[in-house]
Amino acid sequence: MATYTYEPKGVCSQVITFSIDDGKVHNVKFYGGCPGNLQAISKLIEGADAKKVISILKGNDCGGKGTSCADQLAIAMEQALAQAGVSQA
Image 1 (cartoon, rainbow, N blue to C red):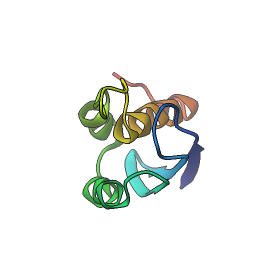
Image 2 (tube, one colour; image 1 turned 90 degrees about the vertical axis):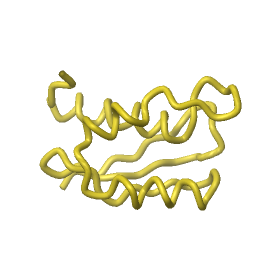
Image 3 (cartoon, rainbow, N blue to C red; image 1 turned 60 degrees about the vertical axis):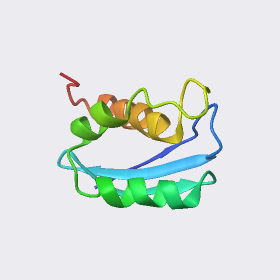
Image 4 (cartoon, rainbow, N blue to C red; image 1 turned 45 degrees about the horizontal axis):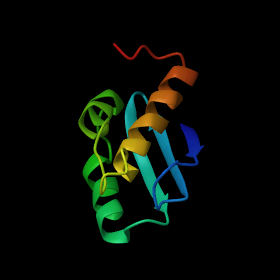
């Protein structure tokens, strides 16, 4: 299982870690940010298809920042899939 670490930009969270195994998302952890909301996101997407998660979370905005911790996770997951050679289509 590949584990990834991402430093988000423009949000309160400072680091996001997660794993992708056979296209499924596991062990998402946010360091910093709004703990209740971010723990909920992590629980809701555990075991979900990474491409589906990206389609749901990408573009979510927090307080007019133009991004959010969820959006940053989607960006990180896109990069992880690209690094693994997985098509985004």
